Length: 471
Ligand code: SAH
Ligand code: SF4
Ligand code: F3S
Image (cartoon, rainbow, N blue to C red; front, side):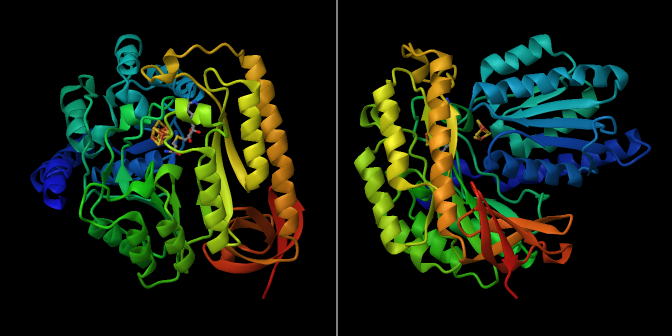
């Protein structure tokens, strides 16, 4: 029921008001402490969910009197928002935190803060507590909206603050947001994940799946549109299960409702989970003129045995039938996906099922990962006899094959005219993305940034296109 969900998951108005009071207190402390506007360096690792969180952290910092910098030497506060999804992400964070030690030695007043998914893992924050004494503040994903109160404690006591309790998770509405981009906007519609894919750490560090009220989502979409945003990406670990367990809208209805908002903008969404992807949703995509015909639908493996061991909840046949349906209702649809190579116990024959699946579907692009064991997940307990080198060879086979597939797909776009959102301009070349999320560049100038233009494709290089403006 909506009422129950609101009561149990939405942060109360009183709590948000308490944080606003802390913001004012921090603002006064900051004014007295610094002879300049203090600068924060906020660096985000990981997925768009983290990017969206960082935009809220920056909104709160701005309200507390901070401005922003990319230069660590200039910073009064360094905040790293971390990702735990693979070993590589984890190692990068520790590398970056270690590099802050001499910076802190040279500037004793520097406040160092770590947050995000890694800080929700006990073995990580324990290690920071013990071995990284120069870190002042550590908080997990469930404490994002409590930054003002935590900053107040750090500034007023000078003591280290750790806020890393586990929680099923809440939804905090009404936080200030400082957005990274002016014409592309991230819009979280739900948080957490209930799927417990056996390899994945996300459900452990992000709590249970919970959806924002549709009215809150639509209000934020209206704000984005009014501020000139041209592309709204609806975010969630599994947007297809938006609204589950409530009497609010489901994802297909939400998509239609955002599409119905007046304005010149397009809609993207991610990530879709095949187990909850329905013909109803694909129909809504096809019928909503503002929704880009791009579907990021991670399949992870082409083998039914591996999919089962991954606890993905669908079969290869079900995945392929969704692709067929999507292509039937949107013949121009661009499909992208995530794949894991070398899941524990995967055989070369099973890996070949993944190769044949990418051949069958013909993805525009793939995000490919070698399996990385995560502490506390089921898959990390499984025997994993294949060597890293062998997995590396499979990985190369997959990416080589995908490169050929993408090149062929790009060739078929030659001569077509695509709608492109212009994102950057360098040396008279503008770059942007097509509706299908393919990168493209063409001659143009700065004035085009943030606008939609028509571009005829004249050249296709692997997965990047070149073209010319159609006036
Ligand atoms: N919620 C999204 C994915 C979020 S994580 C979904 O279910 O599709 C992004 C991608 O990282 C996943 O799709 C998966 O391909 C990859 N990934 C997650 N955990 C991983 C692990 N332990 N090892 C390797 N890749 C992993
Ligand atoms: Fe991880 Fe699976 Fe949830 Fe995606 S759906 S975040 S892969 S557990
Ligand atoms: Fe990483 Fe957390 Fe996103 S683990 S992928 S930042 S949800």
